Amino acid sequence: MDVRTLRYFVEVVRQQSFTRAAEKMFVTQPTISKMLKNLEDELECTLLIREGRQLHLTDSGQAVYQRGVAILDQFGQLRAELEDISSLKKGRLKLGIPPMVGTQIAGLIGEFRQRYPGIELLISEFGGLTVEQAVLSGELDLALTALSDDDNPDIDSLPLFSHPMCVLVPRTTPWLRRTRLHIRDLAGQNILIYNEDFALYRQLMETFRAQGVTPQIAVRSGQWDFLAAMVQTGVGIAILPEPICQRLDPHALLWIPLEPALMWRLGLIWCHGRYLSHSAQAWIARCRDFWPDGVMHPEHLTQR
Image 1 (cartoon, rainbow, N blue to C red):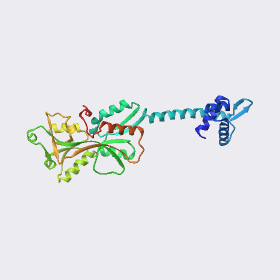
Image 2 (cartoon, rainbow, N blue to C red):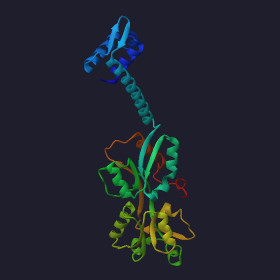
Image 3 (cartoon, helix red, strand yellow):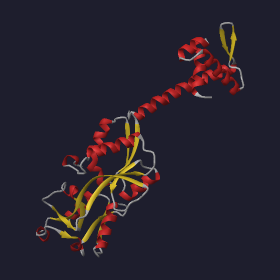
Image 4 (cartoon, one colour):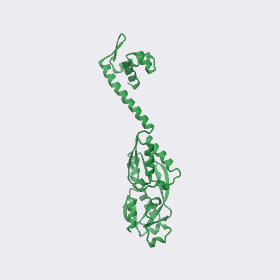
């Protein structure tokens, strides 16, 4: 039984005429008669009885008619819902965002919600390595994370912007004389660093190893503002992306360029070969428009 045959049957009952139903459905009367005969053969029962010009439903016909009306109504609702989804009037997007990134994309989220108010955003805040695994497992549709140089064939990515990492230090005399810091200059310093599930943690540790430095880790955290507060109180120093540093108090803190240059490359990732919903495709398109030149502009930064 297909939906078209069911629709023919319901229309015949409503019109009480094969001829009028055929006109209504823009088909010939023999077509409808044949389709209904096939339906009766498939169900192995009689649905309609003709008495002169009258059509009467059998008990089986009554059951099929009632169910048919409900099925056609549900099918109509399904089509309307699918049209809404394809036209982005409704939908759901599961998006992963590391805590450090959340405040950087508030402007994009606001613009996306304004353009697509019917799309529900389900945002999960985890470290970059955690959101990557969630994307691969299908728990998330997309995720923003710091991109690494390692190519994962199961991950597709869209680079968004790139900024240098800086060493964040207290604004005290020993640091005021420094204009640049080499990664080896950090040996022996108390390092405040991200949790191990952050992509930036992995990037920093690889850089330390490459330069032969064993970092003296004092504090781990997933919150950049907490790390900055610890620097201000003299607990240690941190390495943060330049746009984050620019949001901090320049009277209490100082950020110094790092050598060799270490870049914070943020991008959007999704699982290679997996179906992308209309909502996910719309988010990717908005990211391309929001960062067309791969730069985070000051207006993209929001105050917490």
